[in-house]
Image 1 (cartoon, rainbow, N blue to C red):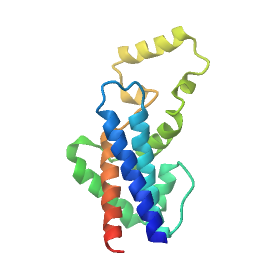
Image 2 (image 1 turned 180 degrees about the vertical axis):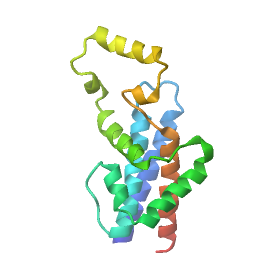
Image 3 (image 1 turned 120 degrees about the horizontal axis):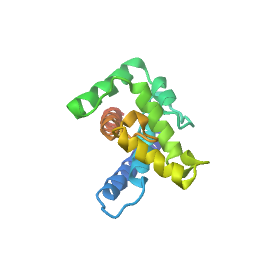
Image 4 (image 1 turned 90 degrees about the horizontal axis):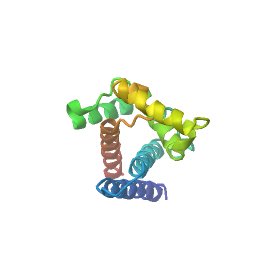
Length: 168
């Protein structure tokens, strides 16, 4: 029974990631839906690996909390696999920050307009213009994605899950 649930979780995560990749290829998209779907697949992959390790589901969107539940050697392996896969395209020097950013994005990007609550249209436009004039620095942005790091993490989680599914 447990093996079936893990396979179903894993299959669902792969399907959502596939759909996100199809959506990313479209020039007609106008939202962050592909990114949100990628975050959802990341969460499912992470929860799937946790289910393999502990035999239960964890009900939270706090990715750092979920990741830190994994044994240290598995955390290190995931980071190493992600670094190897992404080479110099990604920076994993602050994994906690990445996980917190993705958690916040998963929650906040569903309703991104809430980040600008209380601003007038002029203030909203000035906010963007000021950000651009300052050089469009990521750290000053309302939302930061870290797509390369996310791609590496997803790859690593899939490797770890595949390894465990083969050994079952």
